Amino acid sequence: MMAHKKKGLSERHKKILRFLKSYQKREGYPPTIREIGKATSISSTSVVNYYLDQLEKMGKIERQRKISRGIQLTDLNPLGEMFKIPIAGRIVAGEPIPVPASDFNYFDAEASVDIAHTLLPHPEKDEALFALEVDGDSMIDAMVNDGDIVIMRPTGGEAKNGEMVAVWLPERDETTLKYFYKETNGYRLQPANPTMEPIYIDKSESLEIKGKVVMVIRQIDKTVV
Amino acid sequence: MMAHKKKGLSERHKKILRFLKSYQKREGYPPTIREIGKATSISSTSVVNYYLDQLEKMGKIERQRKISRGIQLTDLNPLGEMFKIPIAGRIVAGEPIPVPASDFNYFDAEASVDIAHTLLPHPEKDEALFALEVDGDSMIDAMVNDGDIVIMRPTGGEAKNGEMVAVWLPERDETTLKYFYKETNGYRLQPANPTMEPIYIDKSESLEIKGKVVMVIRQIDKTVV
DNA sequence: ATAATACCCGAACATGCGTTCTTCGTCAAG
DNA sequence: CTTGACGAAGAACGCATGTTCGGGTATTAT
Image 1 (cartoon, rainbow over the protein chains, first blue to last red):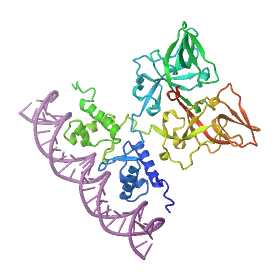
Image 2 (cartoon, helix red, strand yellow; image 1 turned 90 degrees about the horizontal axis):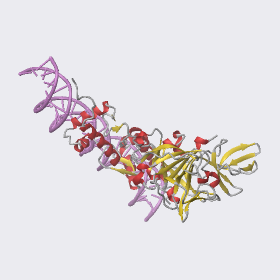
Image 3 (cartoon, rainbow over the protein chains, first blue to last red; image 1 turned 120 degrees about the vertical axis):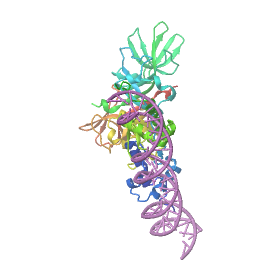
């Protein structure tokens, strides 16, 4: 009673998909049916075609019939789906935040991080994003470690309530990452860690919002002792 | 005396390069010589071939002769600079950790995250990586928030000292993320947050290491209140 | 047993598509 | 003027490659 039929994707299906991916990666263009056959030990082109049809029906690939090498993996981002974000510098508790100039071009940057735009909330206007590397343990109240990379969007000094922002407090010589709330007599800066207390900034004290934090990335291996 | 020969890259060269890039991005595979001709208003395939030869000599493209659509832009990372990591499930303090089976194939996954391999420490063996979404605030001692995505590498139950691992403690019904240290009478699990105390596991107590944490990603916008 | 699927082959077929050959026009050097 | 390099066409040629078809073998349903 259709025992082994379970859920599509037989070993051959997977083998073909794997080959499609590795070939495309290696050569820069898709393979032919015969090449697929050779790689997956299928001796007949018609059988390869048979499986490709199935994979297309399952939505795993797209085919352009009659076109040489007209096969593409649907879930595989063709290219340009990722972009580089320049690392503008380091963010340290006791120093101002380095912010790239408005005409800053990411081609100038030596260091950068690659982020798939599927990870970013607003892929439209990602041009201006920049990244900072966290220096020191002083931001643990923001759940951010030494060595973490924070990705920020410049906001032009503004911030909405509830946004996580990077703030420079000139009169305290202090940089911090906090959730931002405007209150009647000033501002409340709320740590991400719920066990820690907010700090209150009086209206009279100056406060520079350097950008909104959109993402934090921690690469564990780098910091292993 | 060969005055204007200087810079190569005529208007036609650039037009072809631009078309190659946009076509590849749009279709997922390179164009034919005839398609290039049509797009750049060159009526003869031999002329297109002529220009492609020049571009190849300049190092702008690579050609695989005799192969249909065997053209690739050299500077453009074709793809595979980034890969999908399947989201195997959620990690909750009071539940075991979902770990994909060894034959788990990422093609089966519905949800996934895209990570540039430049972000990963060991790009060689990235096949087995999987991701978990953190559910709840119970991992704040690991500097991990609700909604964060942790990327893990299966370790087969082993762990080296100093590695951050996901651990399941069957006798306590508890899942946790900690730095792992083997000690004489058992194990020490050290929180990432230096202000918090480690927990000690006696030799007699069972402890399952489900994987090593290699990266943590926090997308701030999702969690804004 | 028979029919219906699903899976697999090999070969013939028909295009797809790179290559090459011939021809032509322009322009600058000899 | 002749020559030769360069840019451009168009057509013919021929391998590359997708498609189709007749024919197999299992396994399962009727």
